[in-house]
Image (cartoon, rainbow, N blue to C red; front, top):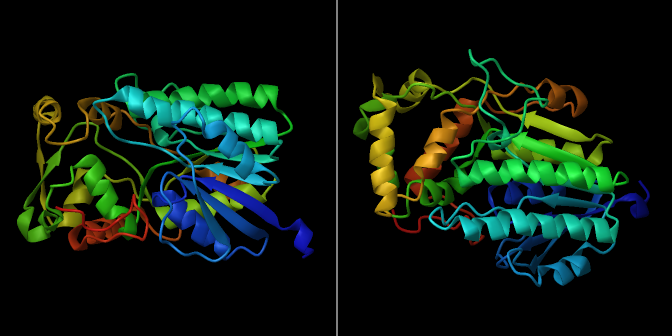
Length: 345
């Protein structure tokens, strides 16, 4: 391969769950010459071919810095996302929506040929009656009661306009199910259960029961498998959206088997009420709106990714969850600020 044909890839949010897996996947990819990882805080993580730079996308002055970093880029992968604070949706909007718009504007100004955007199963409207898996053509209006799903859906509309105005840029939207790996477990525990939730409680002998909620069915995927799909998408001449998920579908019986616990039916309203109270008291960071959204997420059909990307997950959804639970119990992490291990709990 001619060295001049190898790609320069810029990754926003490169220190998070997906970003750390992606830069490692690109390290092994011979068609990639270099990677620039952008994050709010420079990490201690060392990955071959990857350099780091600091950019806070929520700041109005992020545009000039992005212009500098995207010069001569062949691909931009936009992963940066802020889940908290759920009590301040303006703060998440500034990073997630306005920050993404700044990235898209910088891609257009720098004439970057390829933009790969991290969308989500959360961008989809509630699934059909009966729970049949949906293709990438399913409406992406999100669930209005959750900031996360509103923001993901809004960015789908922004990208519709971007593609219309900049047809020369190849745009790919990745819509994965829930992503787990051992190294991200401490971060995910802090984000959704709270930093003081004891990870050691995720032991089968301490969890004899698991709540069985109406509508609770979801898909999971190991983050490294998602990163492999991103790698394939930036290298192949593909456009549009790709659903990413592994089998089997996770429900209460599957969780019970995973935790060696007995599923017990619990009214959704009781769980939501308890969560809403805990959220208002700032005991847990997960909002009741996100709870509502999760119960309405559709299942994803992944035929397009398997066909056009020649992609298939190497781990089952159960194996992805097992890695997450192992990481929660041990306080696993990585050498970046978002994935720092332990951190109380």
